Length: 399
Image 1 (tube, helix red, strand yellow):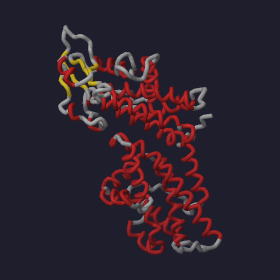
Image 2: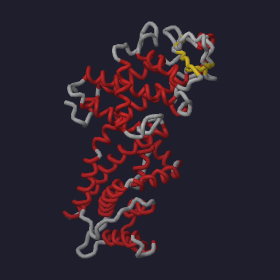
Image 3: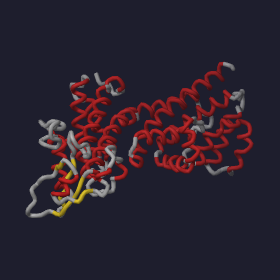
Image 4: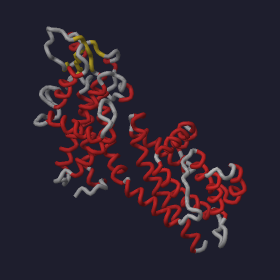
């Protein structure tokens, strides 16, 4: 392999790897809202990246890609709305595909390299100047290295390139995009943790709730040790509350009328909790990381479950809700939901949704684990573990 071929091979691999990583980091948060599970979101994002780059997978991921071909095609088409991403993806896959062409024994040539001929042919077809079958003879000359670019073209993701693209400039375009989206991409993963745990808590509150019409004889009690006590107070519990798993799934409860308010309260509380964990565990004297994290949470939540569609307004809403948790223990170890943060969330929710209903909640106790206190505590333990180590993995310059 000559010097030129070696350079094209190496820059193709580097550009491809950089773009795969950036695309994956962009897609995971986008897929979260339909799946409500970060592992599932990561699996789908990995599959979409592999699909666009015509890369194979192994194990469970290979099975998933084979079984979900239609889903992957649908997710690929969704990307057409992001023009900047499509342009960058075209630059990256050009370098990646040219590298594959070289690695498979393709030659650069002095006058008219076959791969450049293929690129120009795609441009002709994309512009409408030539029919699709015009590509056939060029595809024969470059072989399977043409597949990623043809896939982009098939799904409307291909964007025009120069007549003779410069691989160095193509990588520079990818580098600019990666730099521009760095904060969004890397902060989104920590923000996604906040959103996922908030959804988990909200689901737990809904799962162990009950409702009744407001009466003049209302005692104001909203937290109960067990379902029997809540029934005795006149609240109608969820049908399966006695057999409810202690690991509720958010997607099962998102349509419940109580979920949006529970989710908003959980988001504000978790943002405050994470802020305290970070202050205790790492050096963040100017709250730079916490503010950036909450800004990213606001972007993810904009337009969701009663939050404004404007991220700045969502951020302000979170800041307005946080003070209600000041000077309260996270959870009362002897009597959960009694003068603690969990109790404040439940108290607000008990009267927040609608005017005709009041809500009660099974909290549980040390003797009786059925209730929302156990998943609430599990969520806090998970967040403590994740954000106690944030300095080790944070790319945003926590000093």
